[in-house]
Length: 148
Image (cartoon, rainbow, N blue to C red; front, side):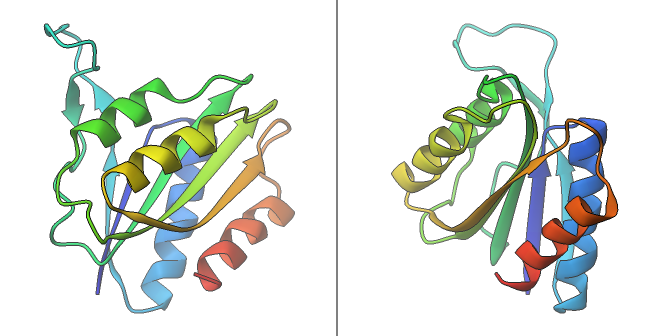
């Protein structure tokens, strides 16, 4: 089975993505990490153009989205990425958020975009990264994946 982990980078999100990858590999998934990076040039669209990040989900059995939330702001880059993805219909997904402050509507917004395109959000987790990712918080991420 194949899994994709698209993530928007922050130190904490990258660490969580690596933990998710390790746990999925223990479950015999072939895992591809894919950092979502904004293209510097603005296009005519209001969406952020994506410089990198796998946008075709056809080859994957599971997609685990990861992004940071600072304050209460939704991740506009992750939302724009999701709007540009194809072959989402019927895909099993999960979401992890590394959060400094409150996560506001970020989880709901990302879940809504996936659902709108026919994907199925199986589970989600918000992990506070305000004071860093200690072992207890890292274990939360491991348990999240084990229970998928």
